[in-house]
Length: 107
Image 1 (tube, rainbow, N blue to C red):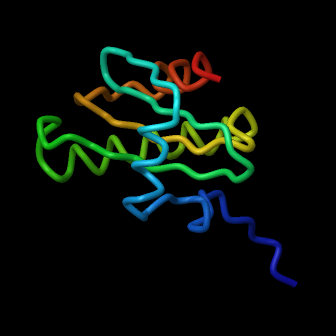
Image 2 (spheres, one colour):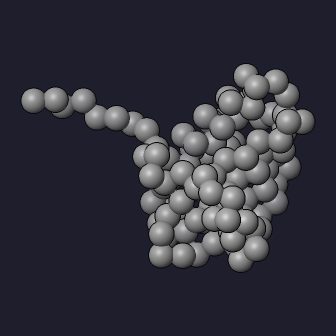
Image 3 (cartoon, helix red, strand yellow):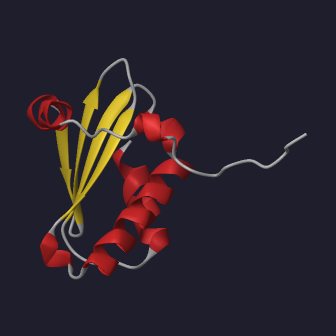
């Protein structure tokens, strides 16, 4: 019996079609913070996208930001039930606790 549990965000939740992301931009509410902008659209389904500006830095820094935001979202996923969410990350911010607080304040 395999008792290992995967602590990851399911791939089925990732919004990867341009039309889905554009719909969230057009119909969703916007919340702006110093390090990111968050768009949330109420819908019957849950989905999330993480977009990082090249101004953040090298690919290593951009990927780190995506990993931090993805984990903070995963831990607070119940707050986003029935919502499609897009995170636009504008600058490098390496404090997981603060990222988690930003995500909690939006819902």
